[in-house]
Length: 288
Ligand code: HSE
Image 1 (cartoon, helix red, strand yellow):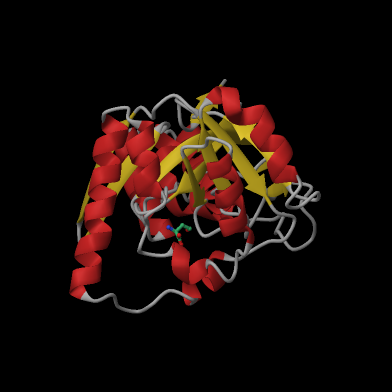
Image 2 (cartoon, rainbow, N blue to C red):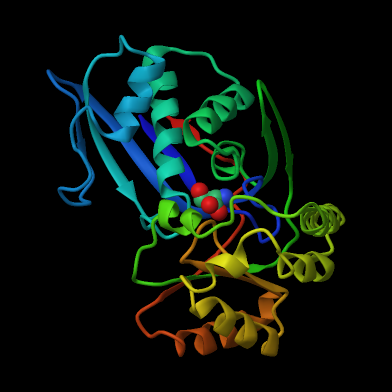
């Protein structure tokens, strides 16, 4: 049995902690034979637990404590600590593992609620489970989600070699934002969503770049963001934004601009990986 969970990008600029998009880069988990103890082969080094304390297994056991230990083989093309939803993908894989082995019957919406409770915000877990664009509001005791198609465009992910922990990237954010500023920031997010729903990537792109919630505070941790944005604008892109808490930066562009953009972006940092991704439409899946 195989579990597959897509990478995700959170925020899309002004949709801070609320909007996310599933991308065609995957974590796969092969569920092998039963054995005496849980063991997960992941090839990610000694820092990531390979026993029952691994987050995937922990999550599964939290939901289905009676499932029998297995050998698991994980392969992930989602680079860790880069703002592409690697930890959310692990949590979602754990939920799917509990579903697969524990016979739980959970709707996609229930899975999103459980995952958002574990992660604290829904912007990565919702698209990881639902696919496509997901917009969520996680409130006290009540969650609301909308899933929608994303406008057709190319997506380039500029992935630096260095990691950036979400905790570090959240630590630079203000505790409070003045009321007027919050109203402005939320109006930008509202127009962005409206434009995305109307398939208007030009307007959505403008709004994505006008975020007032988080990117300006994080700019010093991700100095390449503004450089990429400048090059992307010069080369006809719709928008550039930080992917989640960074350090990955996403560029949305018309597809005929992609090759030139890729070349130009690589000159910023020859060591960065530049991946051309697409919107992932299925969300997490279990294959027999
Ligand atoms: N919305 C989150 C952030 C995503 O920007 O901090 C990372 O968990």
